[in-house]
Image 1 (spheres, each protein chain N blue to C red):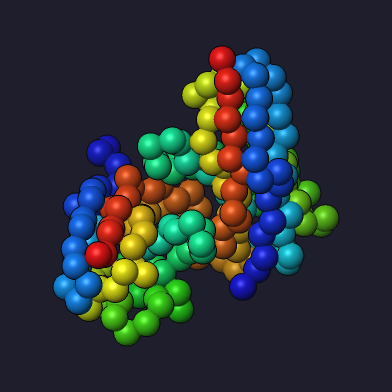
Image 2: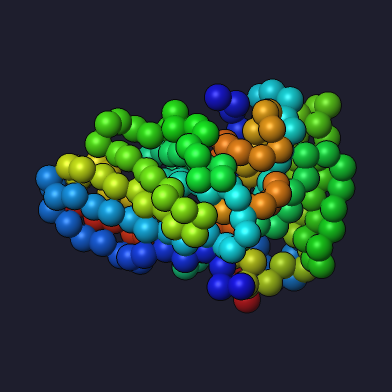
Amino acid sequence: DAGVIQSPRHEVTEMGQEVTLRCKPISGHDYLFWYRQTMMRGLELLIYFNNNVPIDDSGMPEDRFSAKMPNASFSTLKIQPSEPRDSAVYFCASSLRETQYFGPGTRLLVL
Amino acid sequence: GIQVEQSPPDLILQEGANSTLRCNFSDSVNNLQWFHQNPWGQLINLFYIPSGTKQNGRLSATTVATERYSLLYISSSQTTDSGVYFCAVDRGSTLGRLYFGRGTQLTVWP
């Protein structure tokens, strides 16, 4: 299997612009997670889905963030409008059982 | 949420040395996983170990759930072991959200 696939790998944008991050989970996995990693806050869960349904979005920082999973093989995390404090590495992970498998991450820089 | 404390925050070793990393958590857990983040940022799952002991090559882990800690042992360390080691836990379902510690930064010199 190709593992969890994320795109883009790097994104540089200006404050106020919309940013869309994409994730393709491992085929057959029914859990999908979005994490954010920063020096200040470490690794934190933003939202996770089970069978395409959002289960826990309590980590989503504010209304500027939204996530969707229209089907079992695709998810998006959108930031609109983006702010410099959103700069971070965003990871997508998937699992079938307990073990979570992480994608390579998207490094986002908001100027 | 549940609190996760890892120690030491930094560890520098010579190749071939052994090391023990510790993870303390503030509540009983049903889910505990150890991850390695390599210098390129990739996160790799090492163990799912809410209790008991597991071994995988030079790495082993032990979780004493009743005392709320877990240990990761690295034997005969190699330069490729360098990176950050994270402990992540949850007290709820074995599936679902994980709370991550701040990690132990390991540097192994040749």
